[in-house]
Length: 57
Image (cartoon, one colour):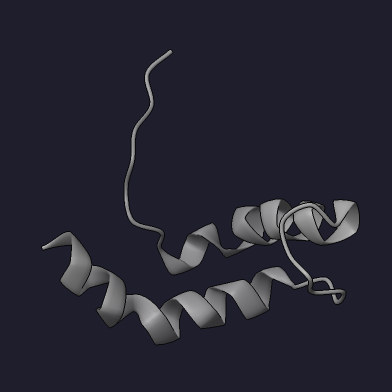
């Protein structure tokens, strides 16, 4: 199996929310208790895009 690593982009918001919310429901990866929406994750990625771009250049 090949693994491709790339930076997240805003359109990844739904899948990131799925993964993040699994951690919230299982209480294994975070102390947060409120599930996150795809739109919220997309907005967060858009707001933090420049920080990620700098670390990948």
